[in-house]
Length: 79
Image (cartoon, one colour):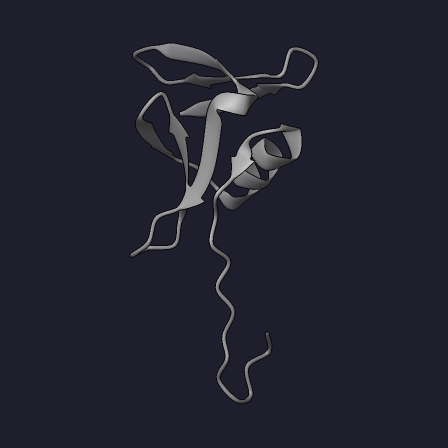
């Protein structure tokens, strides 16, 4: 799946071999799946797996950031 962000028109196009869907950035939610903590985009009720780089780009362009950031609290953690 490819993702193309159009900042000028505030839209994002998600394209696959089968189809393409263009949606306003304001209707996209970026979240991380609870068990795997991998980023996903929720677009028209459909979950789309995305990279962290794509998640950051979508949020920076205007998508809603619903990710839960986890931090290690163990002694000696670099975080």
